[in-house]
Length: 559
Image (cartoon, rainbow, N blue to C red; front, side):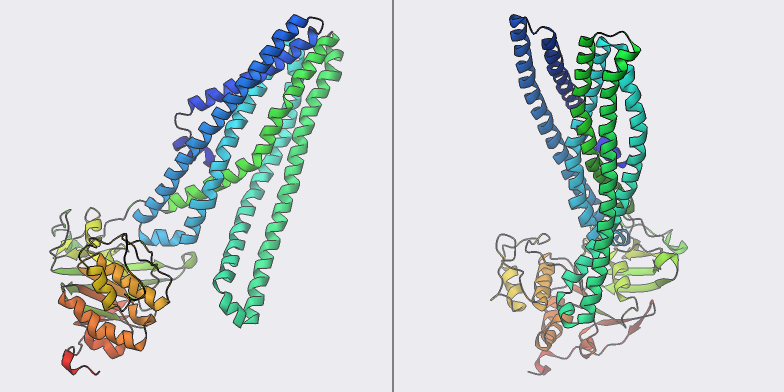
């Protein structure tokens, strides 16, 4: 049971106080029953009735506080565990190999860390109440045994038969819950597609009609499965109710027939059996919440398993196994970064077909401007991910000044880089920035011609509500504010105007080079290939180094 695996690990550690509170609440519930039953047999004793009324009121008052205390403690404990689970999932996503994290996907991660974990939070107080209800049923049965052993056997007999039928219904509910979960995911995917492509849908009626038709089919499938779940739950609920009424009928009709029981005992036993109704209904009503939480827990554990351990070390070639490993310190004084026979294979869908980049032999000298070029799908992004240490080299190795980067030094190696990916996400907060007190941020905004639109205040941009090209400029500013020795840009200029594209290659890149920044840029802008010291052409997973013309002198640049 996946829900219990999570709860035992987090929320239910040291839960004995909660369980004791649940038992106390159940015992107070029993005190209410016994005070009422006792009052039935001493109706002609006013003083006795007053004492029993006092016991009843005291029990009710105590039950109210025990119940409230228990619910508050359960909610507090679960919310604390929920925060741990969410952060732990994010930590795993950050620590996992990038291919593993990308295979899970941001949408699925957000779903599991958000709505599905919230289902767990909602389920725990319900489960605690269910535990209290079970305790109340057990105590009521023990009280019933003090009245008549035969009455207990009758009630247990009906509960057993009903329990078998209910268990079969529960299995069907669990299967339907899984189907509903899958149908909800499919509908969410279609809905997200429509909302993300509203402009395209407005411009293409066929596309809009097909997308809406697909979403409608998913919505209909979800409606059908939810209807089946509702019908099955109705069956489950009526079975539970019939089991209770059958047990009560057994007390009324069978008990006098099988034993010589006086009418007072039958009435008291019937009243005790009737008192079981509320905890039974509570357990029955809580089961859908439990099923939803169980499904959410299964999804959480599945994602957790897919986000495997932290990055694996690269496998050096035989000749390099004798080379020194990079020490577990920073690489701030590096001279050369290199891929030595490194390769990475992208697995194909359903295990068929694949694409391999490598083996790659590439060295990058400190302070160089390196352009990575090639057709779409040639392997440029994979090459960059290998060089960044985001994809583990399945063969060959990653080295710094001849020292192999291992799992122990990988994080220090990654600290060399600032990156602006082609699908970058710009945040207002400058999480990676170092010092902002020296005016460097203002200098960057002036250089990028953004100072009239954005400022930096309290370690954050004042706005990111800008055009795509302007967001890219902010992303570049944020990357440079990290003050890393190596800057990697993935088709950064693609969203820029011709004017600013020219400025980027003719002014900004030389500005960065003059400050000692090593620039590695993926680009298709062949008119500016001369701005690079080194051009690396990627072709069908391999590379070749091209000669590039020298950068024109600044005074020869056209106006």
